Image (cartoon, rainbow, N blue to C red; front, side, top):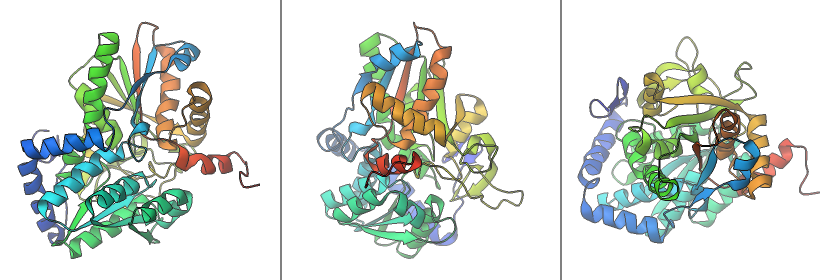
Length: 395
């Protein structure tokens, strides 16, 4: 990051004056607490005793044998409390909000995992929680909607636009702008105005820190390739960050190609996006020639965002990370493959990373090592995948 809030020319703070006061307050608070020993000790205690970190680095022996390439390890973020990597960031932000004296937490959610994680931590800290979720996503992820409500959160459906993640973010930002004194906006990914991309990454980088230590212990050396799915990009940034300086490690992000990038029905931002400004940041977005944000499509509610975090856009721009597009069908096949091969049912978001790994592994040698970040578990997706395959599980 060349200067505060920037990754090269990307990132920044592109927000209206009504939101700038809240952004400034948050930036000052994060700058104060990010290196505070007491805050960090409290956070890492919660990571250990509430989120159940460190998460397991699992050797996928059958997958390794089947694909015939590198030794494959899976970073099991699906084993965290609430079932995904989202708990890492929710713990950090809600703890920060508590130190700031905020009483109310708002969040956006796509697949529902960030909403569930935020609702969980709010229940733990006895804080008011409201989660904005696109109506389309509420239908796709009805189980997570009920989980949030069970945890005491208010889930507010958003019907505007495409009724998906970007629209939920729009509504959450409007709420934040009008309730700055009492409300903390807990953003779920490495996106938005500074300090969010940096702050969310810092709360997620524990994934890569653990994975590096674990692979060095298991194999005595670094991996050759690290693969993760990318929507906004928090799980990928979390596992990538500690490896960025290790030039021998290839970093691969798997984005959602939906029905195919040639169809226009996708969320493949790096493959088809262009430079723009949206949701308070300068980054890559799917947009038309006039800069209007384009509708996106993915079987994955967690990946159907029309942009990508600015640090990812910078990693792409500099060539440090590669980004590949994975179709719905490839992701569903990978969902089924990991379930049958290793007995692990991945989130459909994470299945995009598994699909990319299946594509890359046969091109690598048997003396090489790959780590796949399994960002979440797939309980929430089973019914949707069954529908996709034409199976009526209620029959």
